[in-house]
Image (cartoon, rainbow, N blue to C red; front, side):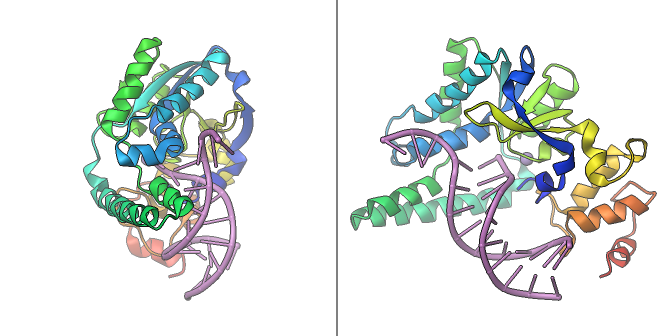
Length: 265
DNA sequence: TAAGTGTTCACAT
DNA sequence: TGAACACTTA
Ligand SMILES: [Mn+2]
């Protein structure tokens, strides 16, 4: 998911940071990342439908970490499923059902450890869970937003319009949505990796004035993204080579034969 | 060297 | 919600 291999590709646009660098800033958080991580701590209970607040504790721990650095969080939740990702969603559901069956089977055989692994593979983040976290946030006066669809575009909106100085996520798509500063891989020590829009040209190996963000976004789309089937055999490197030499930045009107010719296929 | 595929990992004791 | 890693393929 996201753009395959984009983060390693953008190494020259990234640097390690400490949360303390962002004292006084506002951060829009892709909170489903935290929900998924937090759900690991209580996977078995969640799958069995037993009450647990493990995932709430985890999210709040992360929130408190931001607060301790005087960073104001805005938690953004995913809303409706995007129709374009229905196939992905169905596959995931199928996988969850499979692992759930396997987990119960292993449990009957007394293989506790193996069962636990399967439980972790079939946790689903429900809107009820999201609501529990929202309630916990309200109790502490933490801002929350539920996006119409994926959180991605909502997070970008907050960042682009200056409501949030930074975005915290694990999803490389946020770069394409035009965010200026994104923190990936934030850990409980307050460390993370910052990717900046202003530094994207460094990874493309072009001077700043020759960098075109639309071109960059279309390069990523050409390499393959979540919303449509992608061309086999074309990844980021070939897409990048193509977009460096082409003057037409529009991926939809450039002729396919030109692309295929260029990447030698 | 690049891209595709399948597997593992994220929590926390 | 996703990425990283190991391995295969061309
Ligand atoms: Mn995304």
